[in-house]
Every structure is written in C-alpha cells, then in structure tokens.
Length: 285
Image 1 (cartoon, rainbow, N blue to C red):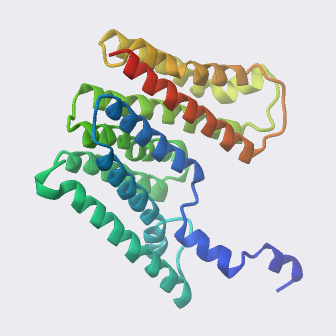
Image 2 (image 1 turned 90 degrees about the vertical axis):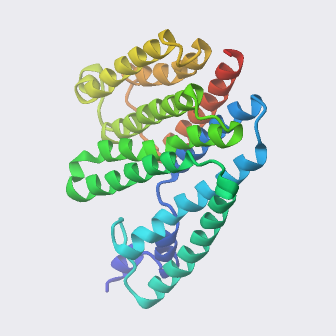
C-alpha cells in the first residue's frame, strides 16, 4: 500500500466508531427537537415529566441502535467485516437493546400508553421504507430522507401523548408541524449541497424549482392548518424564518459552502423553530 493510500484509509478506531455511532448528525436534531417540542407543550398543559424522561431515553437508545444493527446486517453504508468489528458491534447492540426494552417496559407498565404501539408502528414502517428506498433506488435520496423524517418527527406526537395521556388533535398537529419543518430542512440542505457552484438567479432557479414549489405548498398547508384550527396562527408563524431563509438563498451571491457551518445553522433554525412552536401552541390555546 502506498503512503498516500494509507493516509486515506480510516484507522481501525475510526472505522469501528462509524460502525456503531449514528453518522447522520443532523438526524439527532430531527429526533430531539420534535421530542422536546411535544414534551414541552404537554408539560405546559400540566403533564408528567417522568414519562417524558423515560420516552427520551427509549427514543435515543432505539435511534442509536439503528446504526450498529445496519452495520451487522450490511444494510447501511458500512458492514462489520472482521471478527473484531462484529464483536464491537455486538457489544454495542446488546446494551442498547437492554436500555430500550427496559424504558419501553416502564412506559407500558400496568397497561399504560398503549397508543404508543400505533406511533411505534408508524415509525417502524417509515424506517423500513427508507431502507428499501435506499437499497433499490439511489436516485431517490431526498424521498428516502423525507420518509425517514416521519419516523423521527413522530416523537413530537409521542412525547405529548406520554406527558398528557391524550392522543388528541393537538398531539397530531405537533407531529405534523415538525414533519413539515423537517421536510423543508432536508430539501434545502440537499439543494445547497448540490448547488454549491451555481451562481445567479437563473442557475439557482433551474436547480431549485422543486424546492420553491415545496415552499409554496408549505405555505398552503400552513394556511389550511390554521383555517381548520389544526395550528394556532402563532405556531404557524414559527415557519416564517425558515421560509425567508429558503427564499433569500436564491438572491444571494455565490459563496463557498461549508457543510459543517450549514449543519450548525440549520440546527439553530430548528431550535428557534421549536421554541416558537411551543410558544405558539401554549399562547394560542
């Protein structure tokens, strides 16, 4: 092996870390922000914090579990190949399974929170569909990510439910709002990554027409949600910074893309959105 090739090859420790640690860092925000918003709205309604804490532990363990399981079966980007790699993946899987089973057992204790089975089924179908889309159609990357976000953002509905004990219209509205936000984020990030070298309105419009259409559809969905009293108008207003950010990009001059900075910026948008969404639901009651 040449020195240049050895420099490019990942170290064994880095490879094992990639096999057992979720690589999609943005997905942490797509998981935790909805969970926090649903839980916060429920707590402001006078709900139970302990149930939210247990659900959070279960959600993190199950989310983390996905990467080593995919590495074990080879359905993800990497596959455990050597005996050492399979050992490290296995010793990661078993504790995560134990934590998630224990947390779920507490949530379902004494026949409580049975509607979580429905929400869990929705999340499972979304993740299985995402895996199938990745496996059979690499060109459908955005679609697979959008489907995957449904499994993550349903935690908003789940958090509200375990905190309040109610799976009502407000619970589903929280999940819907977080899903719409996440879809816009996924689409925008992919647009930025694949349009880093474009310059000028004409080139950006040619590449980003589907994103602009998505912006229009998002506005229409928010108006309908407000009209039919699914979202308070203050909660719908939480989307305004996101809509402004997306439209303003088409008018910006060309500048270098720093993916890490883009990730942190989108995380900041997500946190600000979460705060505004909670305030909108609480004040809009």
